[in-house]
Length: 429
Image 1 (cartoon, helix red, strand yellow):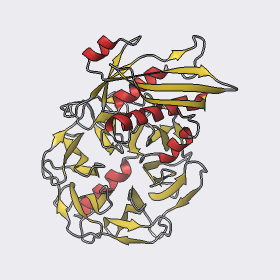
Image 2 (tube, one colour; image 1 turned 90 degrees about the vertical axis):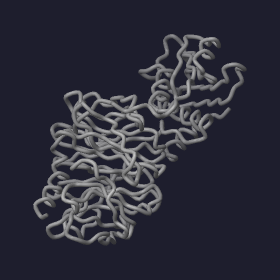
Image 3 (cartoon, helix red, strand yellow; image 1 turned 60 degrees about the vertical axis):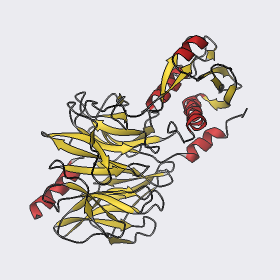
Image 4 (cartoon, one colour; image 1 turned 180 degrees about the vertical axis):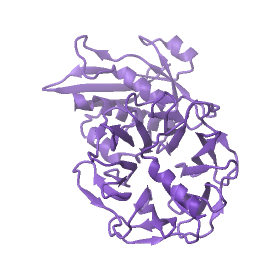
């Protein structure tokens, strides 16, 4: 048991130095998409506000969303859209404005009546055009699906910079990447605070794995739970902001629950088995974790007070790093198949297992989008570790990083503050 506990901890810490693995999308499409027409924006011939055409940014957002299939046409053609089932289409206009500003007008029309369903007009700096387009896509999703879109959300992950693993953040589609840490030692396991204003991560700057919180906009930083020597695997409660984390206790690794503001913390579970990789349920009332109490790493669930612990996964000898879907109906986790890591989902009682990746290197660190439609993960299927996004059924796998070594993505929560920053530049309609 002690040997396994040590192996579990090594597996966690070595993930900084190791690489993520696997990939090949084998998922079976189970979600329907809505056809939507797309007509290029009107734009002055010599005016390039962003590197990509606005309609191509919208196309990527719609296709990544898991909700739409795009029907492109160089001009409005009702027959084309109607035959493809596109009851709505989008288009717009990009113009120079005073100073260095850009005026961006975006429209959603009903195909057959040409009635304007949604119109948004933004006057923004050129650097914010992509964010304004993301904002419009989220509003289209809200208009047509009645749910929040995720185009304005962000991802954080671990990226090797000059040979050192650092924390970076970027828009959910991989654009607008910013390096958050600049340490000479390894940084890893990033996760977002409840308000999206900070990243909690593990640093080895003191020679041990220890949790730190770093603010995104001020770069202020502090160590969390300094009464513990070694801390890792942070998970933020989406409702309260409380932090679950793993800490070395004697010869085992145990899950603790702490308040990041006061530093107060307590052990959640007791026993001789090791527990790592905790994850909150959507309502913050239950906890998923990985334990070797059954003889090999498996996924378990328990109440937030450690009560009613029960095993979730029984298929396979190595299952780990589970996280709960935002709807609370499924979990995503990694499992070792023939020496390779693959991504699976299952119901919370362990039934209805669906394999999402296979025959494509090692696939690890799955993280749900806030709307539960997508899963980001890291994979070495291309020969280097990169970040990918796929639909929750394993289809439409899209690579969002193209160079370097990138692992361990974690999706932000919805970003009302970020959307607010764009909304104040929205001239309305």
